[in-house]
Length: 354
Image (tube, rainbow, N blue to C red; front, top):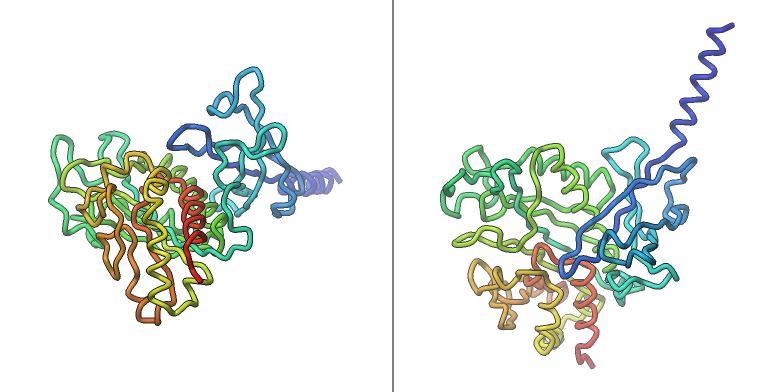
C-alpha cells in the first residue's frame, strides 16, 4: 500500500514539475550607441507556448540606463517566442521595452519599424570573431604574434586554418532547434572569424531572429571559455572587419522587372547616406575604408555584383530580369538589426517610383 501511494505521489509531483516552464525574457538595454542584450527567467505554470500567453513583465531600468532610480520600473512586452533548445521546458521570449505608461521606450527601435504588413523581407549575414577568454585574442592567433596572412581561412577545412568549428556547429544546431530560419554558416576571411545567415519575411521578425541567434551565440560561449567580439574591426591592419550585410526586398523589388526602378531605389539611398551610417554600428569608420571588400564610409555607390560598393545588386537579380533583392554591405557586425531594417524600409519607401 505504501509503495502504491509513493508511486502515485511521485507521478503527481512529476506532473507538477513538468507543468512549470522557464521563460527567458530577452531585451535590449539603454547603452548608446551600442545596446547590449539582457535577460532574466520567469517560471510559470501550465504555459501554452504561445506568445499571447506570455505576461508583460518589468525590470529595474536604472540598472540598464533606461530609467532613473526614483522611478525605475520599465516594462517588457513579449513580441516573439521560440523554444529554448538548451533548457528543459524552456522558451526564449524576445521583448520590446516600454515605459511604465505602456508607450515605447526611447531605446526601443523595433517599435519604430514601418512594416506592419511584413512586405519587406530581410536576409542578414552576421559576421563575428570568436575570442579566447584566456588570450583575449581571436581563435588561431598566437600570444605575442599573428597567424598566417589572410587567404587560407575563408571557407577552409582542417585544423591548420579552421578554428572554432565545434562551437559554430553547436550554435547552428541550437538555432535550428529553436525554430529560427537559419540559412547557413561559413568561416570568414580572418582567422577566428565566422558568419551565419538568417532570413525572415517581415522587418521586425528579421530583427527578432538575429537578436535571438546572437543570444544563443553569446550564451553558448559560457560553456567554451570564449566570448563573441562584435566590434567591426577588432584586429587592426591587413585583416577583414566584420559586417552584418543586409539583403532586402519588397514587392516592388521582387516583381518590377526594371533596371530603371532598381537604380531609382538605389539613388534614394544617396542623399541619406549619413542617416544610414548613423545607425549602422559604432566604430564602423574603422571597417568602411574602401579596402577589404568595403566601400569608404564617406562615399555612396552601387553596382552589379560589386562587393566594394555600398549597395550590391546581386547578379541573380539581374539574371532574373531585375526581379530580386539588394544588399546593403555597410551595416557593421555590432549594428542593431531593428535600426538597420527600419532605416532601409524608410528609404526604400521614399524612392520616387511612378
